[in-house]
Length: 482
Length: 99
Image 1: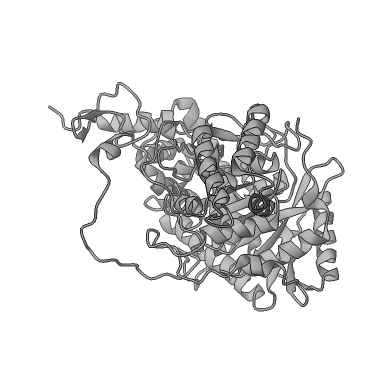
Image 2: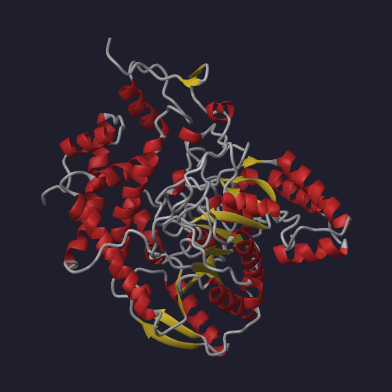
């Protein structure tokens, strides 16, 4: 299937039409998604109607932009007007939003076509998409393995060629880790770069929407469409949006690349470590200047995150009370009883665990020792990055310590949390981070290479990623899914 | 055995605050899982943070205000479409006040 960049050219030349491309994707979903389970909802009718409208625009010579007719998959945590938005939770199983998230409004205005809503860990809490209340998603490279999470459905949909691109959300690695496991490119923008209006909240100071695509150009095109200030999200920042596509060809001669020594740890997969060092050699060959840097508080970031994110989640998820929308446990005799049973029946185990942990961390007598302490450690993690970025332009490291693991392999919650040890610090500091294919294991599983940038400097990340992509063969590999 | 980080009684208290009805088996499982997580989190105590300001948001922000003007809002029908139970233009809930 063509990439996002290729589609625009083919539509303009008349070599392809949006309807034929959307039909081809829908056929592929119909044939192969019963094995992958990337989608919770497929919006066939509206996709075909949107494609027909795009056909007409191209025939008239008036496409609305570089995403006109591009078929996308949308994580089911992003509100879509009139289309069920479940967060892969029983509690929102039948919730139909009355409005579109700002990112959807922008994508629609750019002509993009939604093929459907993708599966995820319930409320974006997890690293394997096994926490979906409906079904687990499988990794297109090996159906016995997880696609990563929480945006596992979006990553798998792109890797399996069900969609040309996708949107996910990233609170502690939920775009980058599944991008790594599925061999796609995934970008978590700077906090505030993309509006969160209409993103169902998990941890509001960490959540950010971002794109997936099979190549760096695709991610740049999607970011261009969704980035920018939105008066409907008071945490979105009014910083000018550069031309990301123009940044791609700039090359990386003289780019200062930092290698954080704390991101090469005992217990990590030696194949991942070797791939990252090989990638660093490629960057050097392309003209980058590398140096070792230290982020001394890395080892504490995970612990701080598992207080801050659950604390915010326990507050955000208080809204699911069975009153105004969502699931309600039947037959309760009074309101308090109804709340307790609705939430017990409506939430899965991981969500309950995080609500409990967050409520505990915020409760009287523990607030300063846990939540307050974690916020102070967050400052230390941020300072580490600030100091490193005084000397370098980007950081390069693994996205995750391991490649995709087997379904059911990580039953202990803490072991699952440790999957995100290299992605979480980036969220705590609010920085942009990108994961891209950085090699494959001898067994054929993708390895994720992570690039971390300065606040609002996605352009440098994309230009470094593009240079590496052009110099390596990894992006052209596709899973043998039949 | 080291002192548990969290007791069954605390689990019950937090479950009440969280409005989560947990079965006895769930409570015990929750207690041991939270215990393991809190033991891991204890490593934060190794850091001296006495003179460190807390960070609540990574990107500095000031309050964002808008004109307090009347604007159109969603129609009642659309807002009630997702309600689990309704009566007329109202959301219906179980009894709140004792008779």
